[in-house]
Length: 425
Ligand SMILES: *Cc1c(COP(=O)(O)O)cnc(C)c1O
Image 1 (cartoon, rainbow, N blue to C red):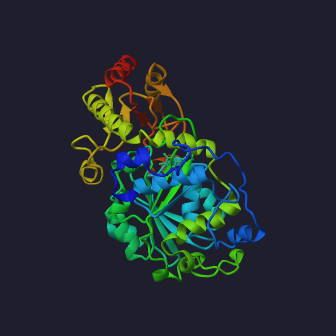
Image 2 (cartoon, rainbow, N blue to C red):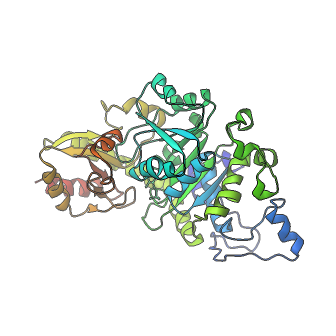
Image 3 (cartoon, rainbow, N blue to C red):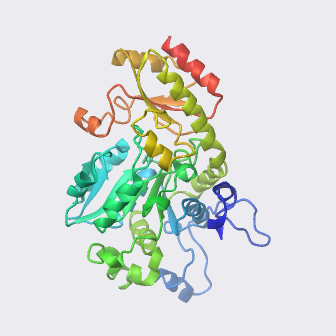
């Protein structure tokens, strides 16, 4: 029923559905544990034969209401909140990859995800091949191996602002019998719903626009329920063969379209425990209630700032997909017709020191590690978030050494531009 409602209504109303006499506002279930009347009732929960709450590491009603809202916004069958975006991307891959497996990933991605995939997951025996986000279908296909289990990309990449050709990536993934996983953090489901273009699984760092106020680190995984795991049963034994840790239950047989989400919750969250705190889920829900109001303002402001930067003689280059003539303009018109996000990548003429002096002179826009919240902020990835990457890895991730990431907030645009102007002077 929720899926028929418009995104604006879902932002405000989806998820928490109070019954008679219950709080109108989503309560914070600040409880690790939940009560049952008989030992038998509890045993059925442990066998996944009944659904219900028993321990917050696995599920909590506050978290589930917020996850249900995000699932409705993305048009998925289910979702799970995680303690961070990093945890979401790790679980999304680890749910279907094990030691000896491989996946393919667009190289224009967030630096933290790059480290996770290229360094830490490698230590677990899972290999990744990075492909240029703009590579041809043939080049991307060539990266697939018999043990490849997923294709991954970001709708709009952080910080390089590349736009993913989701339909093309979905086609490639499906022709190779694997799901497409899309990190939709920057676009949010207000501006793009990757499932409508063939993506199978969506992840978010909810820390960014979804929370929107920089109050709580968090993540989410959403499943479309569309990928047919049984059709490629040999590739996904974790979903299609019995799980010893649940008395031989097979996720696809027992849970159908919810197989992937159930395994992520019942097995990965049980064992790895990166749950979002109910307090943070409550804050995330408050953010979501205005996501549909904030995103258009971010986009309007960013469009005006990008145009102003492009016309400024001190600016060497601007990457914002809303600019006509931008490399990603056509893809953005297709996938992000109502606007992309508030993040702009640009470079100043002059030296690296000039860029740093410019940033130090900003007054309204603060230098913070954060991105994508209500307050305008700025960052120099090569010296901050991406400083652990080599020059070659930086270039691979589409991050020029002079790239300044400007995250345009929802203040009045004239004040933002005035600040940029005085700092450039
Ligand atoms: C920030 C970010 C992440 C990591 O999320 P955290 O919540 O910081 O762990 C992942 N993907 C993208 C696109 C991001 O911007």
